[in-house]
Length: 219
Image (cartoon, rainbow, N blue to C red; front, side, top):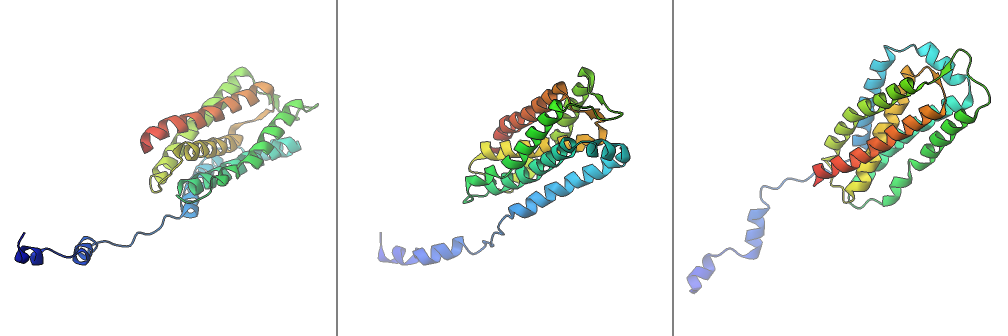
C-alpha cells in the first residue's frame, strides 16, 4: 500500500467521530414510572367495575370478619409489590432480591384466606360459594389477568430483562393478584375450601402462562 493511500484512510479518532456523529443520548428507563403506568390502568379497570358493583354489600361482607378484608389487602399488596418487583428485576444491574418484595403480602393473602375457611361462623346473609360459583371466580381471574398481562409484557419490552423467567413470573403474580382483588366487587360469598382452591389454581395458571408465553415474546 502506497503512502498516499495510507494518508487518505481515516484515523481511528476520525472513524469514531463519524460513527458517533448521529448518536443521541439514551434516556434511562424508569421502573417506577412503568409500574405506576400499569397500576394506573388497573385503577381505571377498578373504577369501571366499581360503577357496576354493589359497593355497600361488598363493604358489609369484607368488614364482617377480619380475615375477609385482610385477605383483600393481601391480594392488593401482592399485585402492587409484584409489579414493582417485576420492573425492578427487568432492569440490568438490579438485585434479584427485589423478587422477595411481594412475598410478605402473598403470605398474608394465603394465610387469611385459609383462616376464612377455618372460621367457626358464617357471615350473616352470605352463603358459601358453590362449585358453579367458584368456577365463575376462576374464569373472572383468568379473563381479567389476560389484558393486564399483555399490557405488562408490552411495557416490559421497554426494558431488557436479563432474567425473563423471574420477571415474567412476577408479572403474572401481579396480574393475578390485582384480578383477584377486583373480583371482590362481584364475589358475594363467604370463604370456602372450594373457592380457595379455585382461586389458587387460577393464580398459579396465570403465573405459569405468563412465564411460558412471555418467554417466547422476549426470545
